[in-house]
Length: 270
View (cartoon, rainbow, N blue to C red):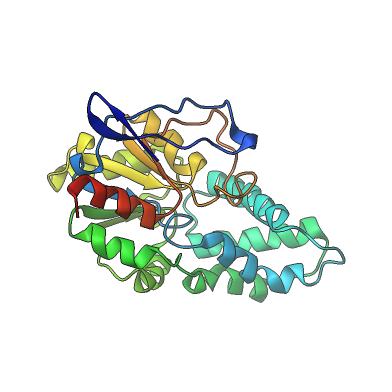
């Protein structure tokens, strides 16, 4: 959605669904996508459809339950255990962390799960699908920006996912590199410091992500411009991420990566 202010075309951030209305200030933004040098992506939830990957990966467990769980019930329980384990054992790499998440979910739902099943779920990240628009969007954006990963996964899992995304990222910073998980400030400090060594200043970074909890809250604290890829625009709740508390401010909002590309094309008259 666009509006015009002082003769310039500017994005009007769309209204949020009813369950989030009134929790943030949407306004015209005078920013343009083209003013940034680097797009930093959280990848999972933004480029990779991790919620579908989780639900499918958990099917051997949920099929044992004597009642039907909704998709959101599964994702919200997963978010709770993932977040708590990331906070408590921050040095654990992501596949090992997911194995413990699987174990905790089995206990909560009262069904048996062998450790081999838990480990198998931990390795399932490599099978999580990309969103249909991700690869084409990244190919286009690669011609206009440096593309950077800031992810809570490990380097091995990211390597598998990257094959689905079709581009070579200019830098990739993972939780395995830091020994901590977002929303830890350490991860953002590391990224900003290392991008500066590549000649990219903080004001030239547009942090592009879905998660309010993992990404947009910390981006606000660090004064990073941010772009919300609002994949859950047609769904209730926060899915596989925890509630962020106070809803962060976002400088740009798009429902998917294809819409972001179209907005950039409109800026450049492509």
